[in-house]
Image (cartoon, rainbow, N blue to C red; front, side, top):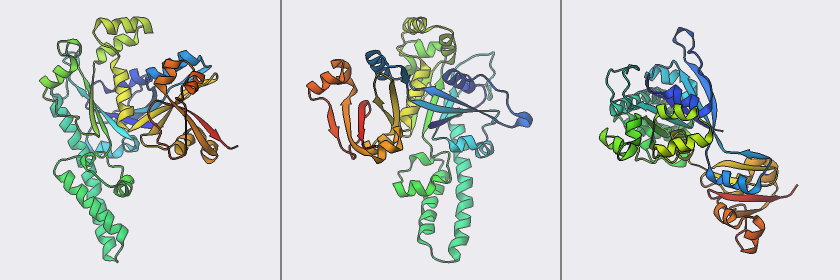
Length: 363
């Protein structure tokens, strides 16, 4: 299960967006200022799976999912980020940033300044990580005095680079680390190393006005934020999403069209979270079930088979593969076979986003 945790300053709309994405009702914060963890599952919108379901008319339709966590009552301080385990167990962080102007919802700093708030929370992540790195380096220095240890020396060297980066005010996600070094750091669960999706909560006028969200982002001086591979930005309007949530599917589509929008902001957030984590979907289809399976980009066919069942991975023989679009255009697997569009691939084949696969395996 892919896991993403929502963070943000008070009154940014974090919990509202969480509830809308997951349909989880609001929970009260824990007593004595203790943070209360809410967990909900969101379905990843995928038009391809919807079209495959319309084609095959299966008994079940199972989209990919992302698990979202909201921490109600967390103060946003460095210490609170360290103390809440749910933040550190997440695969990615979603920072909900207030950009809407509403006098009835007081802003923590009295003024609306998205760039300031983005940097403020980033600084908290960096401070939390710096504390952990410094403590571990102190312990390593003591351990290495007892004798030479190549692995501990490599860990010290990597952590020294991390500390220097954090001291410069840069998050660890900006580092280009080797696969081995990433594994060495995994146990520390550094917050600033996690992929970050900035969710900008706009006014309706900013989202639907001239130039749309791109123009609003430029006016706020945020154009350069989110350009890094591990940092993205998506704009939503919680007010619009609340209105959409009250409508049936047909009315919601009409409402979005009237606003000049092609999809809801929630769909963009969920899909951006999925993509940020580096995951793609392949599909299995049939009369009983159409399902989207989540795998990391670059996964080979045998490992992908293991997502369905470990027995299929162990007994893997071949993968019958057809790309989604030819299948939808032809209308059947038989027609794709007739046109040589169904391929037999071996265990080392790298599964592509949108592949429709039938795994052949020994029982």
